[in-house]
Length: 572
Image 1 (cartoon, one colour):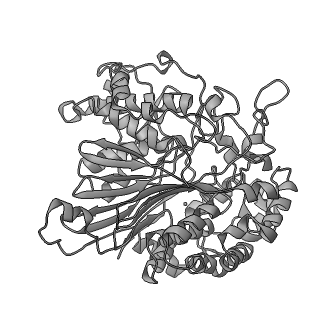
Image 2: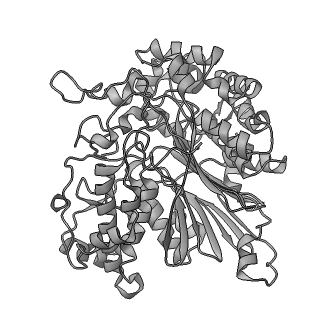
Image 3: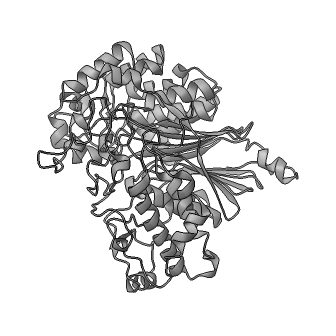
């Protein structure tokens, strides 16, 4: 693929924004073509925090469009949800412009510093050094999120960046109530954070995590955001702020340079598009594996009549599709500017038909029988996602991330910014799993200024009469969540039903089917186990899916935030 030039009043607000929908006036009778281009007349946002949702709605009320709102939500999440995203992270933004149907993906994925090398996380014996790729300053890639936001605002937005950043600045300066989710995450890393004066000053009180509801103020982050509002988001990569970032990273043993920051560019890439059951499915291209894997999985499932099989057979087919696309992810996917990604082959119906031919309805396929890469480990729930629809019908589905909770857990002195640990998303050694249990090969090996492979899968599904805008965090589980959500949407489920449904997951290696309570009935679980599936009940519920739906036939717009999180979906 060629280069194309994420206390009281606020807590009440959280409850108000949990799930909201509004029925717009019914559209007048018109042709199918007219209905397809009609505007919803209502705006909707679903994000991982109600205050970030409110920030986006504020910009829509003040002259912005969906693309401006995406900038505001991204910045606000960096303040109120530091566990999942931040300005030193990156991600991918999927855009739809309603006026002409134009769609693009903004690649704001981080890249490796120029001093990075293939074996930088291995010891003298060629084995991974524990935690070096996750907890050290070496784990930080060159950030992409500010550049992505700058491109989004300059090319597609309507209002000045300073206006879009204003809600985040206010939240950082005036504070917000500490949520239960962030409180729990702070407790997990208390030993580390208590020894870091920058983190402690912003998030702790007398060396301890304060109670839920405590107002958290981040004056240094506010100052950083104010600087960007005054000088433009591109000032992150040049001049005073860039020099401060580099000095702070290198003081902790990192290898960033000012030249690395100056060299970074957010890119526009052509989305991955497929068809399934008459619906048009759009997602992001490499360096994310998500779009290719989603279309490949749907193409596999299209070889079967899912309405004509039993519920357990349907779930077996989904499991086997997940298994095969994750195997291909491990072997073939990486940064398209460094390797030749076989996009056409992996997303072709003929290729999917070949994969489907090896699937049996009565027997699980052992992952070891599929040629590929061994090893495996557990996965985690980090990253963040938001979905936006404005009144004109413009759409954004964005997944942004620092990688793990708080990234590496290291803060750059004086900036209020946590360092990402995205270098762990490279394959440091063939067959060795990363922090999410995903394995890889040479296609995703570390190289200077190469973008690490991602699993993010923001998605648009246009079924003619209905539209879904969705996505989720969840590491290796993201692809499966977007697949399950797409199937649920096409089965007629509402946004609220889609985000709440119990989930199951298979990622090729390890060869196990993880599942939430309620994902399988007792009879289904017994049948799957009898067919050879290794079932592992999940220790926790995963994901934080954010869905917006628009029913063109009735005019109803719905926004729903995953009940596993504490986000907000709102329509107005």
